[in-house]
Image 1: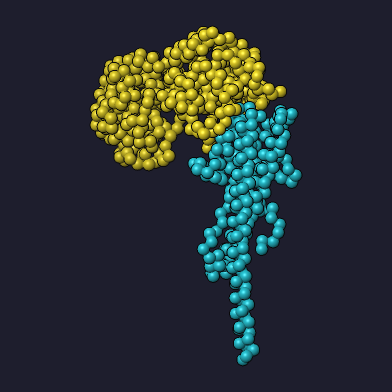
Image 2: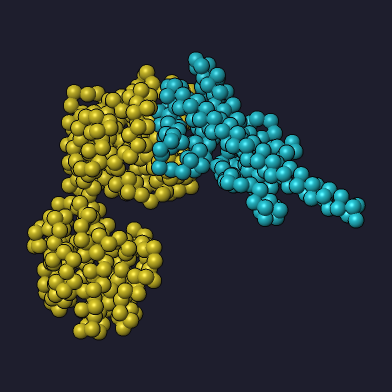
Length: 382
Length: 198
């Protein structure tokens, strides 16, 4: 199948939508499909072979922050040329409600079009006001995908029509191997945590309390914490002075370093007290083959296969967490067992599985329709 | 003796007249600054309205339309973004749309396009002027209020000190004598008003 995919945001800026498109495109290529992604990108950015640059994105204020987007008639003609040369069986646009390439692609294309909505659209009034202008573009979408139930709700309410929910995948292969950080995990063992340090629902406080219980009995045990924090000093102050030098706070880390962090610890901890719908970080730790200790909330119970692929502890209970983590740290055989179980369990969230679900949507919209072409009646710019 | 008394009375009279003149001047400045603020509001509203018209005219591609409509929406009352930031956003959104190479050429010949573009540029120019005018008067008024005599005798009464309206007012059109590109933010460059501040 020949798939044309459109990314609305600059390829050289890290972001959730860009990673989604990258992982999905690569999974589709692995499945034997031909994929071309058009995306705004700086001219000197090295692009993967399947990405076509649509020129530099312009930083503009949108929705209260500055976004780098592609719009205007020059972008229209670039998209049109790409469509014309591509000869795609299906066009897959991402975030068509953002003023960028995806919306333009819908506007100038005809044929089977699938759209994926990633985020809730906060400004419905703007869409209502501009709907007469956007209608030509948005009404051409034949199949809609939402990455979450929340995204589906806004899509149904603001653009109309229904959508299939296909959540993000986990690029399990990417997590499989990485070089541990120098000196980690160390002979005394290490526990890892990823996430915002000052967001209470991420539960770092529960883990720090548990470390107070575990630390004194295990003189070599260390804690590796990575994630953004407004005030890391304040986080460290909550640790008793005697244990402080055994807690390493890394702050925000890059995507690659995140994987290294996962390979630098013996046990991964997800102490969240709520607010998780899937637990992507936990799934990523599982993809790195880590034994996981997670709080017993719905999201984690599901991803850990009811406790078969990782230990669950009572939500918000440091003593129970210390008990579960301590048992794992003392038992290498149990860790190996959970590692294998985690790898097996996370496979169902791999992008290859997601890609097959997406292909099903493609096949549905392609039924009885011709290929993607350049529409005759719109985009009459030079 | 009598000459001394006359001198004291004359001196007191003079001081009284002078102080009252100063108070009156501060009062007039406040009135003028209020009017300048109203004028600025009117030009901002007018700019929002013609930008909205352009966004929904169907002349532009849908992405540019959505971008402009989003910026206009931010300037409406009741938005969650401070007014000065929202108006600066609209300035930058208009600039982004207008500064595409060949933007005008791509629209020329379409019905109503030239008139609408001219109207948007004119509205932006009026914002530029009204903004400079207001901030300049605000600076003069604040200065008059802050003089030692005015402070000690509390000549400004209950009137609040005018607040600078800090927005990016860069022009989208190449009007003669106007700076191009993003202008520095803040109450810098109070140069437009050449008349005496009284």
